Length: 109
Image (cartoon, rainbow, N blue to C red; front, side, top):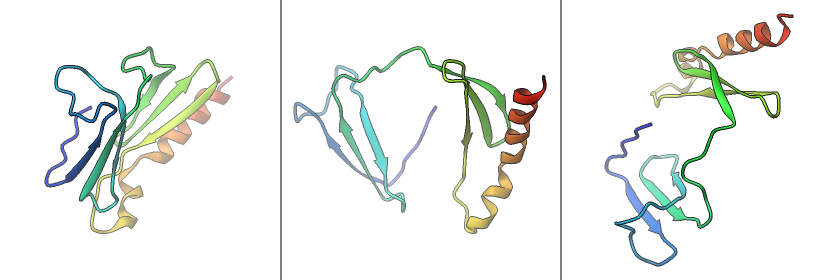
């Protein structure tokens, strides 16, 4: 996944109070709703790479369905793009197709 944030004020909080340049760090990044500021807070003990519990079973244009076999649970991930009229966001997403996919997969038997 690649994300580009331009003209955003970024605040970084690290454990050693210095910007890490030679090692990878993990943490949480939050971007404000107006997309003008962001914060990154380093957290110790987090795993950078691990084997995912979910696997993608369906991909739509702006939605995808993921399945966690351990919990027998489905997740729908929705991608929304910033537009002038918020009511058009759901129209751009094939959320209903994702729900129909889950229904067909779960209750096909």
